[in-house]
Image (cartoon, rainbow, N blue to C red; front, top):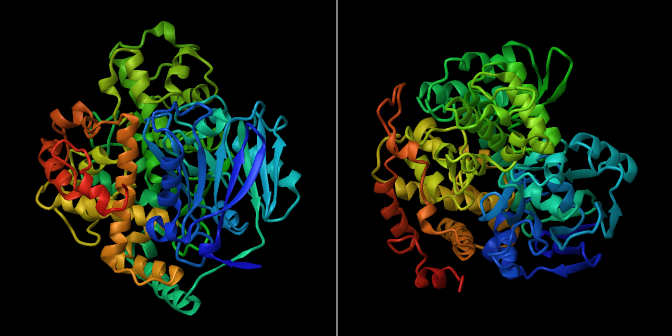
Length: 604
């Protein structure tokens, strides 16, 4: 069977009442919000009170396919998990790739909305319209890999795909992820804890439907052209296939913005031992892997000398478990990355939280009596990384239980939240904003807290794509950030990978969307869709109590100049960029959305 993209349905499952409903989605919503991040956020904003406790039964967990997920669109395998974040209190929309999203789309469903809470652990199975809520007692407590294997075997249908939580999600760690295809992660904002709070261990899907588009011939021609563009671009056709995202290690370090030892420095002396080139030269890398419909193939299949195998680490994961913690042991970093995937922990938040613990301990703020087995969280101690990851997932010790809720709550527990390198309580990723002014503005204004994939300003400020910008210049940066944020919202809602934007631009995404929806949107109108989604998220956050004064960076990054490297002496000048950014967004000088902006975007 086959169905048009816009005929996709919504599956609503209430775990309290054990009811299953299939609903239609109004076709006009696709034109206004596309799918994925946009459509999921629209439903969440309409259906929950933003002030609820994120781990309460009142929260909803939405698995949302992108408009193009499951089609042949370049990188068209992405899906989003949308909910209220237990880490930040903001709206959360965590993106993942692999093959789960495409298989989920083949069931004929655009979204799954999970409501309520089961009194006991369950998993959901979906085989086209055969939908069941099943007892999960045999898999509760298993790691994500063992859970996946058990479910695929029990389901007995070839090609089934699994999204699940590990022990971290079960134990409500606020930095828990949802893992699919074993090693792909909807990683950020603690979405795994929301899944755990509902006693939902996993969702397994198998579909037999094909996804059709309105203008099939035009769509196919557009896809061929864009795949050729991806193959020809030096980033997507050469750098990422050869070294994966860890192609960035040496680039970012030599640019003077590779955060080291909890952002105390931005140059890591041990980078040569842990970079993407080292992974290849030491022959740990066996193959590169691709997600659904992707010609880039930036995934890493890695085997350590011990025989231990898995995927990764990616750039962010390798940094957070490496330089952020002062560790230059590639085997320990890779092992820790494997553990995060199996335990269901967000690698960025986990490593960054350990880094915060290391600084807190070395400065005497964590007493030795809070340690068990005397594993000291000191910078450079690779043993501590592996030890505390396990403790965080299981909340096994006094210190690890605090770390399970992220760096901000850890720092606050010991009286020094300023040592948590977070925005809106979410840990910052692997770029020091003192060295990239536009990227710092993106961090501060991100609707889900510290995040690099809501408007990747590293692309123009460091990589020179689509053009090279001076990373310390301020003029025009607010406008660039807004465009990148709006375009990223479109990409996320279309169900495409952000990496495609190295080679593709607004015109290319417009062509794909128009062929699918049978519309004639201009590029400006496509970007306005992104603006609409961005403001919908901002509106939710304001109603949740996330005020504009949280559009900021850690004090260290605002007041302490970089101590070394090519950008020594620089610090973030966020205060000079925010006023122009607010104005461009159609917000008032304090950062609140103006009524006329909401009206113009159709959000009133």
